[in-house]
Length: 270
Picture 1: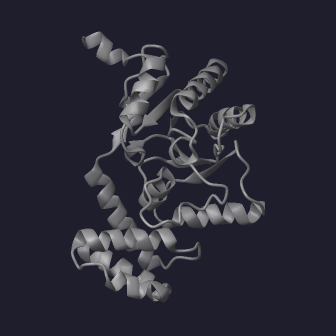
Picture 2: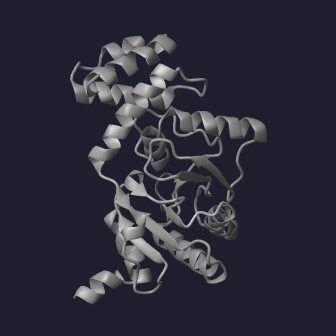
């Protein structure tokens, strides 16, 4: 099957499962872009449950091809910053990074974002990884028996992402002023992810900007907490060789550059 055939097949399987969305699906134009958006929407709303092997084979083929089309970025090759020999700053799509683990800013259900094609990182990571990620998260949460508390971390496979694993952590949601507890919980997100990575022998970890954006933690203050917490951890632990602060917005790139300085490679070539 070529890509449009894969997409149409996957849509048909999901619509057979979730017939309540068929009328909405009929409104999507037949072109590839619209049908791919429909597929992402259906994947986003599908509840966790067993997946057919033929569906998984077609889904993985599609997501694998799209991964290669986007281009994979090797975390090991990213230059470190002037201020720290084991920290890098990289601006781009975290789903392109080949690292031992990337960090997902999750919600307390830990099942991914159910809003079709939402712009949050939780949606982006689950959409690129495939539906197996939601199923694994559901198994973890069923065994836990309660929502995920703020500041902890869970480890899953990464499936169709170039990373090996995903670290899921729930940061604080800010309502009004930032409190001491908010700061402590955000620091705990970074610390818990790194401790779990070290426990599993993972050497490179890429962090998104946890709790900013949809959770409204002020970007500059969040970055300061992130850099301080990661730096303290790296001073005490040698097993995590590299931490990448992944930023998407220009504003966040500027904030992290102000905190950590330019890349060493760029400085040497200047």
